[in-house]
Image 1 (cartoon, rainbow, N blue to C red):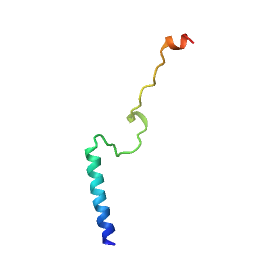
Image 2: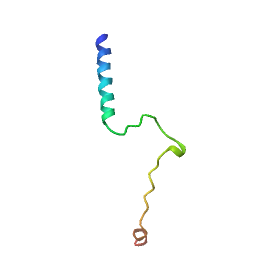
Image 3: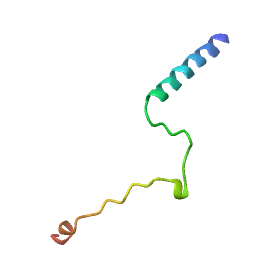
Image 4: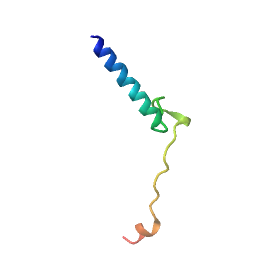
Length: 52
């Protein structure tokens, strides 16, 4: 039983180390409202729709 606990502890330490070295990791969950960042919608060029 103690081997499972030691294995989990080692796995957790390695996982946290990899997440900290990975860059911008946001662990806060989903954001709603004005705090959420949205990508702008892709605009279609007028010349492409006019030529069809």
